[in-house]
Image (cartoon, rainbow, N blue to C red):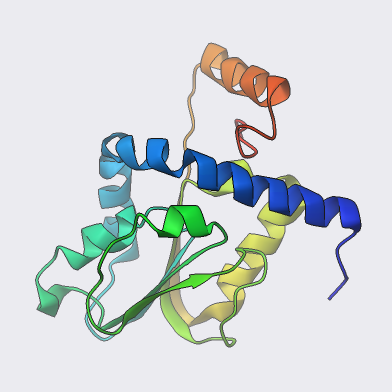
Length: 182
C-alpha cells in the first residue's frame, strides 16, 4: 500500500474534523434518509446467520434500523465503520455482538472474505473518484463469495439540484466534508 502524502493526510484530517462538527446537525436530519435506508436493507437482505458490515456508518442509522428488528430477523454480528469519532458518538447502544470501529472506508480493518453483507449509505458521493474506487474495492475484498454489497447514494435527475450541490462543494469544500453530486 502506498503511503499517503502530507497533503492527503491533511485532507483526511480536515474531513474528519468537518464531520465531527457536522455530526449534531447530521443526526437531526436522519429522518430524510429513512426510506433510502429501508430500501437499502431490503436489497441487502441481512439474515440472522450473516456477518454484517455498514461502511461509513456515520450516526448509525443503518445499524439502529436493523437493530430495531426482532432478534430472529437481524444479524447476530454487525460492525459499523466510520472515520469520524464525532459521528460515531451518535450511534447509541447496539445489540450484544455488534460493534463500532473508527476506520476509513478505503482501508477496512477486516480480513478478506469475512463478511456476508456490506452496506454503504450516503458515503460514496463524499469521496473523490480514487477514494470511491478504493472504498468499493475494500467492500468487495471483505465480502465472502455469494455475499451481498448494497450501496445507496443521493442522486437527483434534476440538473439544478446537481448544479447546486456542485456549487456548494466548490464554495466550501472543507466545511461540507467533500459534498458533491455524482
